[in-house]
Length: 276
Image (cartoon, helix red, strand yellow):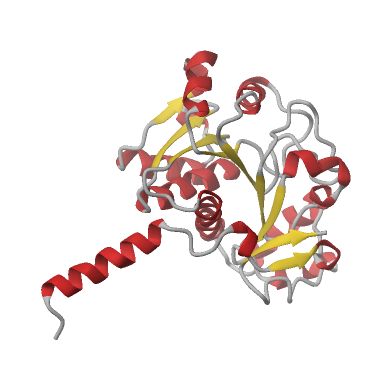
């Protein structure tokens, strides 16, 4: 029988391991860009519908999986999470929900987290609002940026170790506008934090890869499920940074109607680094 002190040490060791990166980004399994099937924005939207309406997989389950993969990426990028300062820039849609879910995981791994939301909470879509409410009950600072001055946001973002870009997803059209454009501009002006884009850098065209001046410039992009074709273009390189491919539990069958064979994409791992 183990002594109480041995058990406590074991628990402490497991807790410490949760805070340290299991693997660095450079050590992740790789997949060649030429071997990665892509899904356009329209194909991805159709796959989401098949997953939820035909296969019965909830978007909330996918969001939870996405949040954890984003948190794992953040830990790998920073090397550890204990005491690391991580903020999220949050839009009103599901990408914002992914970012908020990631913050919850990072909070559990001893990071100090907060979020800057580009609208009042009553404008968040239901899944994002649910994630928001959980963090609020956990005491995480959540700011409505429409009430904040540029100087306050810039100061807070500048002092972070990592910033999660959860402002816009693949369904957004046209260049960023309004409050989202303001937050992107403020984030791009800071040189300190590492920027992790969720699915694609906010403002980047998912199909063409064109990145207007108002698009996020990321150090790492974690694309969820299959990448959008624009992420693999030369035009997108500076905005995307290192490209990771994250398995969030989207069944390969969801892509079949689009003629996309995704069965072997994650055979070597559930978080892959895409190489040329």
